[in-house]
Each structure stands twice: as structure tokens, then as C-alpha cells.
Image 1 (cartoon, rainbow over the protein chains, first blue to last red):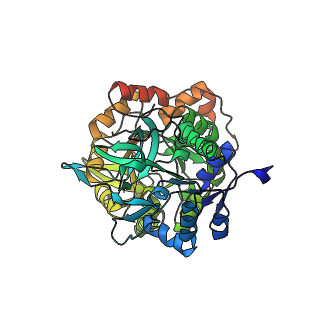
Image 2 (image 1 turned 120 degrees about the vertical axis):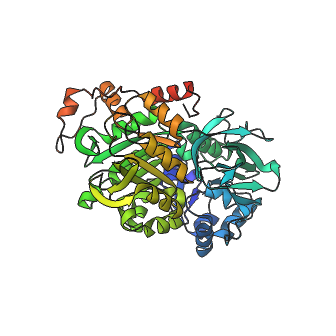
Image 3 (image 1 turned 45 degrees about the vertical axis):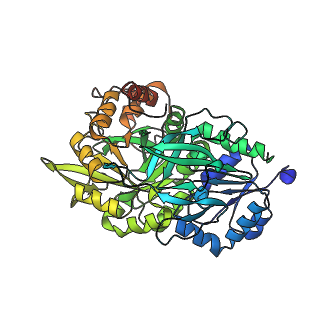
Length: 218
Length: 281
């Protein structure tokens, strides 16, 4: 039955738990496979770039398997990609972290670390919490977030956040203890979230389903 | 916005969910999967599974329970108990854990915290600290569920853990754990103010007001609860415990201790919101 079904590759750069991303895909009937193979990526109908681990290690591993160019080529040719957490950050130009260097540079912008203090008050980092997401300029009616209410709670776990060069790609922002940051982006075929939809209960799973529906993957 | 998390803790021994007092005297309460599903539906923000005898016997038996749970439950799962190396951590992440919780191995070899944080990201590494009050204001860290003395000062250890790159600390008051007498406010407030990473308060929740109190007085980032929620689950559900292992007399009597006013996660969260403590309901 799966013969006619679009193939989604969950990109494995061998750092962490892809189990829950795969389970989220399986639960709504996406034909997803975990792979570190360049050919699989080049042949995929859509890509998921998940997010566990450190930026530096992730870029090193992507390069080691020759996946960085494969992902760049596919995305530039219009293949849908869904980045999650570190997977969102990897799409950006570069990290401000010392020695971290360049990302995939598919979206213009930088990756910053949360400050240790805001006005003498200590900010706990990592930001590990269910926090709310809200709209900026883009409407999310026709995006993967279509089933969510404004200020829906999503699960975050991260020390770094992205700062896009222009606001136009920002889909939602989130405020952590006084610091406002970009919590999801949508730019043509690129959709990515700082939060973990596969860890955000039923509402989070709706994001996978709607992303798949929009891109005719089901 | 700053929100707090409520994290049910599931202590596991063999195939069963168990609960002790001061981390000892384990009673069998039921099947872990039943409790996990119930807490997920009730709005748990995360789950923690702790293999309470793994360190003791140097074994690691949680894998099946984790992979089964992670198939149906879409919230973060932390796993602890008996994890001693990078390869143990890798294995448990592969079967579906999102984070790991280390205690004994980290105290024996602090370098493990650094290596693991670098490899898997800080936010994957949670350090459990089991504190026993020595005398007024002096707390020492223990391992193996409060059994093994280390002589290490809890506050110095917490700061070291932070420096080594851990993502979170679970601070357990072994003195209060399982008693329902309320949290150790002094211990939790001090840890929370000393470190730059999130702190999870554990040990002593006997009623929902205890949770409100610790959050207001000590500002931890999350609260970990077991007995308070488990006793409520037992009242409302049947969970067939495997009688092959452990003490099930307590379960059959369907009672709890007089120090507890059992309630659900939703009850706790409603109480938080009434007290203007932000959380996801």
C-alpha cells in the first residue's frame, strides 16, 4: 500500500533520540524512514531535520556523512523540510557560539545564547518549559499550526535561539522570562519550530499532520 | 512568560511501579504503563522513570517499559537508575527516552557529566541529588536511593554539576521523601538560588498546597511528585500489579497514609493558577 505514498526521510546525524519523531510520524500515517544516507535524502519527497545535541557536533556529523550539500540542494529545489529545535537552528547562517561556525545557511540569520542575566535577575538556561507561542506578521491559518489557538502551549528545551535577519520568515514568537525570541519560521518550503511538536501532546501531533496534509504527504 | 512544570515520578522495580518512604521500603502499586497513560491524559508536563534497584544490582531493565510508553505518550520522558556510561545513555535514548537522570555514576565520575553534556547536549543530562540533612543547614549528598554516604556537601556539588554542563538538577530531600510532610523549603530555595540551570524540587508533597508553597517560597522551575498522585490513581483506578515481585499488601487495602490528601495533576494545576503561578492546564 505504501508504494504510492510519498517518502519522508528523518535525517539522522547520529546524536540522539529520533524515536519520538518517528513515532509521531507513524501515529498519523506519514511514510517516514530514519536515514543517514545521502541517496535517501536526495530521493526523498520531504525531509525532517530533527533536533537533539549540540550545534557544532551536528554540523560536523552532517558534513561527515555528506548530508549538508544534499539537504541544501533538495531544499533549494523546493523539497519541503520540517526542522525541529536544533534542526531549526541548523538552517540558519551561523552560530555566535565560539568556534561553532556556519550552519546550512538556508535562512539568513544567527543563533544566539540566552543571556545569563536580564537586569540583574538570573535567567535559568536551558529554557525547559511548556511556553506559549503567538503570531507576528504571518498568519498561521494556512500553515502547519492551523489547528492551534493563539498562545497555545508547546514544549521547549533549548539554550540557544535564532535571530532571523528579517522578520518576514517568522511565524511565531515566544517570551521566556522577559526575553522575546523567534519560536517558529515559515519561508516557502521551509517550516521549522524551536519547540518540539512531538513532545507537545495532541496539539503538537496536529502540527505533524497538518504539515503532511499541506505538502500532500498522506 | 515563566511557567512551571509538574512531573510525576514513576519508581520502577522489575515490572512494577513501586513507592517507598525515604526511598526505602518499596510497596508495589501497579503497572507503570497504566500510571503513565493516566498522567499523560491528566496533563503531566513530563514523566520521570526511575529504576530504583538498578544501581544496586548494576542492571538496566527499564528499556521495554520505556519503548512501550514512548510509542503512545507524546511528552518528554526522562529515565534514570543504573546508567553508568556514555553507552548506557545512548542505549536508553535510542529506546525512546528524551533525557537521562544520573546520580551515582556522576558522583563517582564527575567527568561523565561533562562528556555526556557535550555529546548529547546539556539539556539531555539531568543530575539527581539525594540530600540528607546532617545538622542545621548542612546537607550531604547520598547515592543508591539515600543508602550510600559520600560525605560530599550538597550545595558545593550542585554548583559543580552546573559548571560541568548539566541541563537540570532534581533535588530530593530524602528526609521528606514519601512522608507527605511538605517540601524542605530551606534546601530547595538555596539550591535554586545557587545554580544557573533549572531546578526540580522533589520529596515531601502531601497535598496540593505543599506544591503551591514550594513554588512561591523557593522558586524552583518544576516540581516532581509521586505518592500524592499515585495514591489518587489507586483510589480511582484498577491496575493489575504483577504479584511475582514485591509487597502488594498495601495496594490490596486501597488506602493511603493519613499525611496525604491525594489529588490529580489537574487539581494541582488548578490550585497553581488560582495562586497566579503560570502552568499549562
